[in-house]
Amino acid sequence: MARWNPWHGCHKLSEGCRNCYVYRIDGQHGRDSSDVRKTADFDLPVRMGRGRRYKIAAGETVYTCFSSDFFVEEADEWRPEAWEMIRRRSDLRFFLITKRIDRLAGCVPDDWGNGYSHVTLGCTIETQDRADYRMPIYRDAPIRHKIVICEPLLEAVDLSPWLGSWCEEVIVGGESGPEARVCRWQWVIDLRRQCMERGVAFRFKQTGALFERDGKLYRIPRRLQQSQAGKAGIDLF
Picture 1 (tube, rainbow, N blue to C red):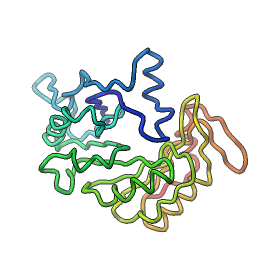
Picture 2 (picture 1 turned 45 degrees about the vertical axis):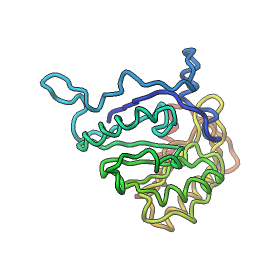
Picture 3 (picture 1 turned 180 degrees about the vertical axis):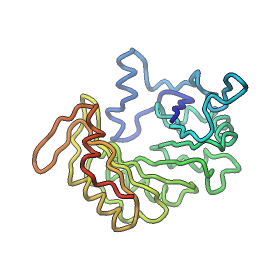
Picture 4 (picture 1 turned 90 degrees about the horizontal axis):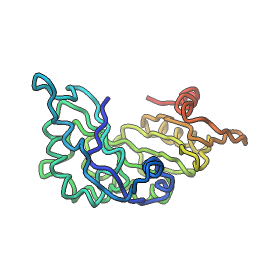
């Protein structure tokens, strides 16, 4: 696994951005997260090490732009070069997540077609409002590999009008951090039911810091949020 943040910083766009971890971490160091800047790792996918070998070895999954949004407007001038590096490294698997799926059409390279086979482009859905807006766009978008990311899940969400074979997986998780909002077991279970009925894989990734089940509210340390979700044993493959 490798991480590649070609640029850093973003603008809060929807309710799921309110307690953004990037803003929280930057704030601890006196940095302004709304200042979008190209990073020193911009060329990481094509960077060579000793023996003229790529520093990121073939076959790796590259988690891309997790300290920004790949489609943030300020990165428009840098994105074509980033796409070229992605195209060049077809021996890697790139994983991106966006809240700006409505910008996809104007931000892909000319040879994108139905998407690059080595790129998974996930779309974040946090509330029903964002599902109603983003899911029709995402379902119909030319992307080879699609994963819906319901994280942070902030309310009950009905994805059933859009779910189908086009979606490879739905990932669900609560919100982390000191200001985390509650995630409820019933919301998670209902999304699992929707996925089961439509033959879509489902993964309960993390509980979040505040998790409610059977009328009880639990405060869960960050180090246990993924393991506690795993213990629920409700993933579908």
